[in-house]
Amino acid sequence: MYDLGIIEHYIYTCSYFGDYSGLLSGGHHFRPVLFIYSLIYKIYSSSIILLISQAFALVLGGIFLEKIIKTNPELKIVSPAFIIILYYLYFALWWIALFDFHVDCWLIPIMFAIFYSLQNHKSIILITGLILSLCFLKEPFILTAAAFGIYLIFKYRRPFLGGILFILCLFLFYLVTVKVIPKFGGMSYLSSWAFGYLGKTPLKMCIYILSHPWVILKEIFTNPLKIIYLIALFAPFFFLCILSPLELIPALPIITISLLSQKVGHYIYSNHHHAAIITPVFVAFIYALPKVYNFCSKFKLSKQTLNTFLLAIALFFHIIFSCSPLSKVFWVKKLGYSWPFYKNAYIPTKRDIKIWQALKTYIPSDPKLKISYQNFLNCGYLSQRKKIFLYPSGIFKADYIILDLKRPYFIKGYEPAISLINFLGEKRTKVIKDALARDSRLIKTHWNVFNKINKTWIKIYAYDGFFIFKKPHS
Image (tube, rainbow, N blue to C red; front, side, top):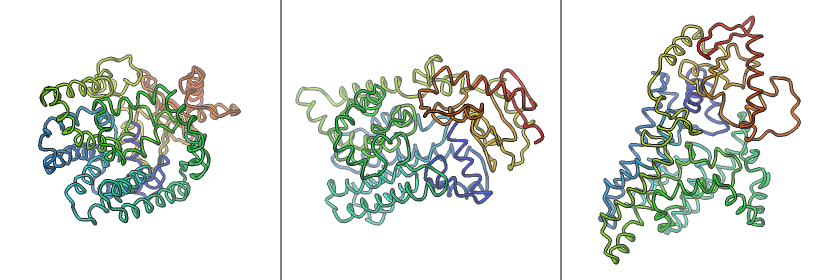
């Protein structure tokens, strides 16, 4: 999958070539935590390590969630087993867990550990260290750490520590997004077209948001996908988590970024960007449950009745929004996002095996070779190179191009459209937005590119719509 292969590439180049740029600005993200993985890769390099660590992080989150319940006297009425079932039914967990890898997975146990440590009055040094560790996962989570500073002020009456953390994290966010990421070849958040309508500087953005609230409200509430996004986040809890608003403070930065962004990937429910929201909504939910139980008892509704109702709600939204074997995308092939998550994806076919054998046979293992291939063809054998390109990027520079016409050609977005059109020598006269990725012109352009490659490159392997091309004279 897309991020698994890319992140493994960053880890590999750091481990074997001493290239730290992928950790500091790869994919326009700041992910220094990958350095730890690069040390492990010096001993053994395999994507299995990434997937096992991700599964461990998600399970560890559930363990800390259980500890929060069991160590809080006010939550004695709450069933840990019931909450853990809801945790594993929550849709956002599955979009992190399956077929891909994201460092975001570590947010979940770390944030649960922060709530647990605060609740049980652990060492200030431990709490501060846990909060600051969020800053080294990915740059948006620096704002999550800053929000924990606000949470400390209002929930635990620690204005000094909370204020220091808030200011320090805001400064660090500015430093990372404006200085570090651009220095190593990435794009600053402020340069992103997704937020361009707000302004070019943080001050201008804040002024625009405060002075044009109707524009912001229109941006949010006239976009059906953003409404669905909010429903997906809170409906599985029957919106009960809003009864503990302070616990939602750490989730606000990511929710705000998603709602303000004009990039679909930020607010569509079917991705990993919601990791920073999972922990706060669960903590808010379990803190709200005793109040709800007490309220329902006045109407002679038992705890078991309410739990059964909430479990049914959670299961319903799990089927609708998740990608697990219980979900609609697992069983219904025609759904738009089903390709990687349909039931057939779990079992390698004869075609899959032949493709894997062809890659090992026709692509040399030399890590210095440059290869361009589709997002959905990522594997360790391809990603463990000094330089890789995601098709259609790199089709000018690659030694080999690998294409599978039966898989999605690329992730929908702006850059693939530009790369394809530039490859054909067309003049770019306007900004091509995400919508173009669904446009028939882009599909036509893809076929024009494929035909050009097919005529001018050496075809060294072809099987059932799968092709390996070698650059002439390479």
